[in-house]
Length: 56
Image (cartoon, rainbow, N blue to C red; front, side, top):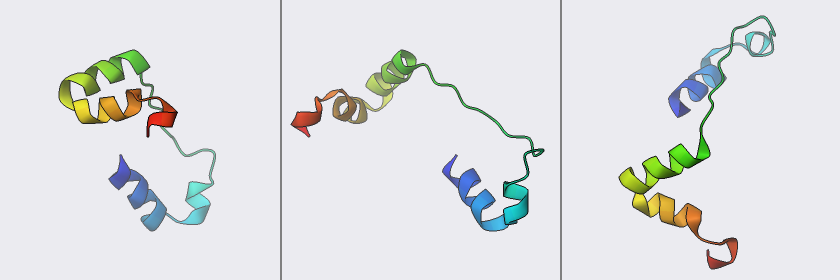
């Protein structure tokens, strides 16, 4: 995703970035499914997200 956004920012002309007729995409993430995936695959990241804001 980062590479796609970087490519768009660097390679596309400003007028094409602002053209409302250009097709776009939308990503939708289910928060509980994302946390379950993180807990299984990236427990360190899940733990840092799960901490209370005062604990950081």
